[in-house]
Length: 121
Image (cartoon, rainbow, N blue to C red; front, top):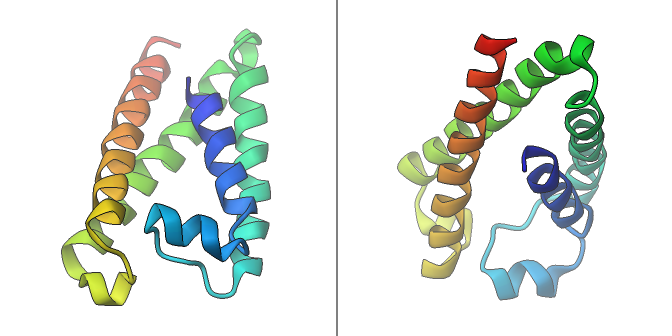
């Protein structure tokens, strides 16, 4: 699950220069898009690690820790942006706010699940 979500997020970030996609989703656009596209490669790399590390007992713990840092950190960043920035600053409407809230909750849940994996490993 964590690998699939990371891969989907990486794909979304890879298309950050596609303005009509971000406009239709009412998500804030990355400026410059180059930063988000380069970041998407790191997220896609994390997706690969989460996918392949799950089947290798020696990698389960370190890969899970990396996933916890990514997912819980991302949830916190989204929460802080929603709490301390206005919609005008984010350039989003109600749909964008809902998508960001759902993303933050999903990321926090995945981070918590990976944290339990770290404790068991």
